[in-house]
Amino acid sequence: MLAGRRIVLGVSGGVAAYKAAYLARRLVEAGAVVRAVMTQSAGQFLGAQTLAAITGEHPVEDFWDEVEVSPHTDLGQWADAMVIAPATAATIAKLATGLSDNVLIATALATEAPLVVAPAMHTEMWENAATQRNVETLLADGVMIVGPLSGALAGGDTGPGRMVEPEAIVAALEEALAGAPARARVLDLAGYKVLVTAGGTREPIDPVRFIGNRSSGKMGNAIAAEAASRGAQVTLITAAAPPSGSAVDVVSVETAQQMADATWSRVADVDVAILAAAVADFRPTGVGDSKLRRGDGLPVIDIEPTPDILAGIAAMENRPYLVGFAAETGSLEGARRKATEKGVDLLVGNDVSRAGSGFATDTNEVTIYTSSGESDSWPLLSKPEVARRLWDRILEDRTPG
Ligand code: CTP
Image 1 (cartoon, protein in one colour):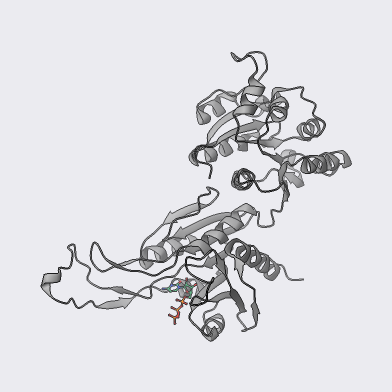
Image 2: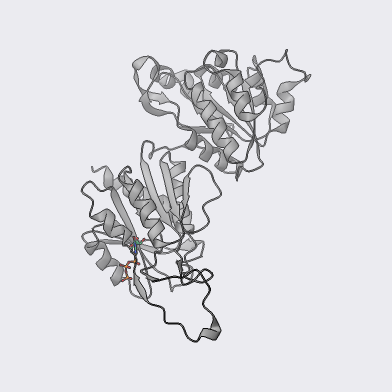
């Protein structure tokens, strides 16, 4: 979604300015064209040269030392979206009142593109009635606010006011570019490390043929994207096309064995693992280098079991919170049985033979089972909505009371 999009990155003067360099890099990696604009005090925290090296163009720092006559209107008109990260209390106040006494604010006023603001300041300043009032004004003006988080602040203090990580800002930008209405983004998965598997594996029969299944990866993609947009650090291990967004680390695999290796080597490090992939249970043995020929007669294909990825995680001593999926046809009794027998915390069952549910559709009708066999049936929903509810449910489960 960011590929080819023109993003103006505004940096104001807070310690979190160092993270703006990383944000710029994430945006460039996602294919965006990035131009930066900095306030004078941002220069105390981040070198203009650093941003120039990452974006390929020197940031705009002042109205006066530019070749262009009107750098702020040029930038504002050029932008497909603008993000201000970090946004200090002063920057937020100036934005809320339209006080364009520096080139960053002037650019923000001069653009008609969507604006995302990532506040960063000390807790007292964030909680100050004036700042809160200004944030409300910005939201009412259609500005997307992302964060802040609670965490370590400058000078050794901790509390609300810490700027969100660049991945969450990228997700907010994608939402803003997609035309979503402005909102204060809830980052209730901030600090979470999450692993999601998706797609259907392909098990080679010979160099050109494989045994596969109809999984599109859409459900797993929606789960990964939702987690990233709520502030989690997400690894998506997929045998299908990943989501177009860039806020997720993607590991592409093809076979069950590759998915198992990629998953098991990363899973010890995560808080939640959601295995939405449709993994082949069997694979052909003795796959050769050359194509099977029709003229050689009917081949006999021997098969062997693939590794059970979920079972490997369930058996770990300190396993993460574990969610399995079960694609069933007809009765969901198999899903209930898997929920109680497979050592998961939750199991998402769906009947893939129903219209609008399961593989390759944009909707899904699922029933959630707990390890004690209790169930909760959800109506037919879009896959992103299923993902949203699933994360709400996981958070409820992980924070008792
Ligand atoms: N799974 C896995 N590794 C496999 C097969 C499945 O990790 N080799 C995971 C899937 O990602 C899913 C869950 O296990 O989260 C259940 O998959 P499913 O194929 O329904 O389970 P099976 O035990 O293979 O059940 P069935 O009897 O229906 O074949």
